Image (cartoon, rainbow, N blue to C red):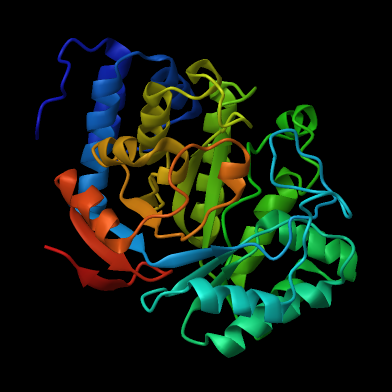
Length: 368
């Protein structure tokens, strides 16, 4: 086994290293200790060892396209710059036909997934959201529909009067294949109250994914970090995801999302540091022993730091996206999209093997 990069580790770090190498699960105390440690290289190398055991040198990406049917939203979450009120300048709600026309204008032949999220628009019925998927599924039957967050699903239950299971079944019939991971933010009701997260609470978020998994769906999950939460809040978030994964096995990937400052011109002190981003990716890999992939999301942390993250436990770099809107509305200064060639270059430049995948991590092509 390769020695850790910094040999002078204290007793607690040595214990964690031993636990990880023996395949033993890390505790809340272990996770908080790692966040409070300044030994980034040891943490990163340990996460890299775990990832190499799980995925080898393969790093995954997908040809996908982000779509947003509406930005009108009943919620007023403190961190969101994407939402609009009905009638506000810039507010919109696209019909299925309008979205199909948009896709036809921008799609390229390799796209195999639509990533669909949006506002909680209470001015349209649930059927609107069903018909939105139907329109895309009928026009692009070979493109997988990964749509809606758990928070959106909870919202649909309220406007429809249907149960979570009934909502998911209706959407599955319309073509839904997987849920996106958004809406988790930090899984703490105290955090959600302070940050005015006016959408699904912790139990509701987890229950939507539990129900989806029980229906045979594989889903994604996230953590939005870098505001008021403590290190303990982040680790408790990961543990709740880990416990649900123990129960259902339905999560394919965990996606740490670095909070954006709501202003493209914000100074560096308003953004998470590269040190914090890398540490969060590495700790996610170490804590979430039962989830196959940790994603480095280039939209939030940048393409070059994404390359470095591939040596800190990440095994996925998301996809082409085409035009991302939510993080960029909040102040992201990264590219809105990226090409397949650029993704391959990014991964190979980090000394890894690019693997084009589908939504469910089936390998389409390996670029060796």
